Image (cartoon, rainbow, N blue to C red):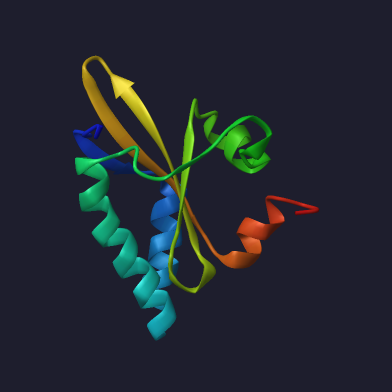
Length: 113
């Protein structure tokens, strides 16, 4: 079963993450930014197609900043990760892109893992 979203909304933090990738200029950073751009289109078509983080699996900084009801995670090229949530407003469903995390940031969210 697929669930469609009306739009993909990008948080200030995710926007800064993407700008950092684009301004990096190296091939790896640009590949990650391009994958995120491509995924935005497919997330609108099927917003629940990726892995979910639940309970203690949701990083504390994400919970503290966004307090999401659900968090989905998708691996990106070169060890980067995209975290997003799906929210509803009235009858419409939206994907909210929370963060694009580099490998060291993502690992730091899971101490001891």
